[in-house]
Image 1 (tube, helix red, strand yellow):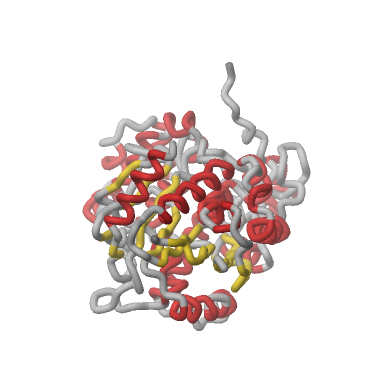
Image 2: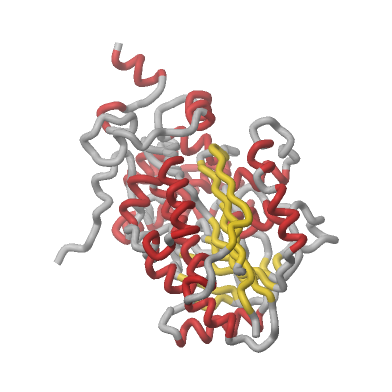
Length: 147
Length: 288
């Protein structure tokens, strides 16, 4: 019998469940290793070499090297673990969250100051809110693409 | 007999800790937020508990994917503030209450909740930011938090997380446990996390002030009904990380009215958007 997973139709959202956790185990544990200062230094000195010490998939390694957090999440990463990469890079949580929307840092910060992203149109896949797949990337980056 | 005197609810956004630690609380961005806690700091001084039972979640700090306890109670004598990648916060170490914590663990497990007992654990911003908001800035070395704290960590990182209903029932079991402790301690229970926020994907930045305020209304007046809300509503309405709000139901379940006593007295209510990516909510409820 199928497991209850009612959260698969929330747009722009990946719920970190047991399945994602299994896929992302080594990716997330690599991230945990960055909580130690000496590991952060070794990673920064040669990222590829450090990543090769972990039994991660090549896709996962490329996503980390590119700092593509959406891709990391699709491959089993969890944001609280991925945040350790951001901390290593000196990025705030807001910068990390914003990077996944396609918006510039300033655009994302302004959206938050104005009260954040509205849930309207963003509750279920198929509506027309700004988090829906057909409206990516957001901000000026998206407008350029549509001209 | 020990008793629960009050419950406190607050968000635990890491950027709030950073603003305090880096001396940014007077900046225009942060002033309205910290103003919402002026009353609370005075209230805590006037109503100092003997122990704080602090419900929070670990953010991939003490618990990696090696072990994922659903409910973990800290029974150690002390807990060190963790290095979450930016260096440890400059706050005092957290002194535990091993006797009461062990008593609660035994009672709650006998009441059918399978707690994980943790005798060694660093504590992250989920625990220390609420202490900073309510207690100000004691010197990290010479100073101390006002009383011992029992950390109670809930898994809200990997699904499935415990349901609101189960959290609410757990709170009731914690209340029974506290009341069966012989020493006449005044215990506050704090529920932390939330409110609406999403930190991942193209939907990052989601805020739902209307839903959050309805949550506050119901937490005060209709906790039983609120505890029936399924996870999926939290995710759709309050963002993937808004699920942290189930932890507030543990604290609410421990209040006297749930066991047939008088309704709590609302001493303070505050709501503010944004702190970084997050809607901040805060309540103080006293048992009459």
